[in-house]
Length: 336
Image (cartoon, rainbow, N blue to C red):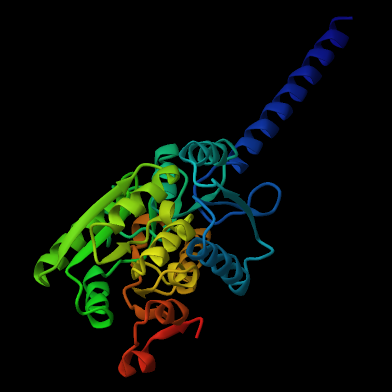
């Protein structure tokens, strides 16, 4: 009888050790080190999130996913895409869910999105895209040597070149109305650049901020009464509701200059803008590097600085503005 009991106890101990070993191995398989290893279900998990629906951000997302396929990762990664619909609370919830789901990588499109992702985790690798001022947004302290768990691609806004374009197309301008969202760090950074550029060129900035989309129309109407032209940088809040501003400017017969090519496509007059498809591709290239095991600290922020003039010909015709011949030859003409 004692021998039988001893045998039973031995079998129980062996069974318990097997279960514990199995559980421990399962936990290790779910760690988020960014080492390039696939997850337990065979695919590397990417959480992809953008703050709102508008042309520039959509172009980045579409180029990112297409490039992932081009790089041969289409069957090796699983992309969980979420859109916050312009709501900060949604952003926070989405990023928290990515963390609880133990994603291997988070890709955050636009500055507020990147800030929400950075606040949600200090261990999961994060790649941002379309962040105009990563240092000002407190995402990195050094563009060349990221020191946290985040790096990415930047759509540097060249306000000086945009103001040169304003003076070329509308040379009699004196007062530029600057319409922006006070909650977006990229817009605050652009405002400082605009003030310097205006001072250098003998122009005056008249600023008008909004705190949310419900204030856009009233702010645009108020600003249009104080300026010669209106300008909005690559501001996600306003870009997602751009027709409201373009309608106000059309009624005032006022040129509306913008910070991104997509905003020209959506009804703005003109800009000097970067190519957002190229931004999406560069973001995907960084994702591949992290998938293969490259550390964040070894991936400097990629800044897309080359920009082209974009002019909406249909808007120009409505405003009665003649496009100079040299710009016709070099600009990307929308709605020609």
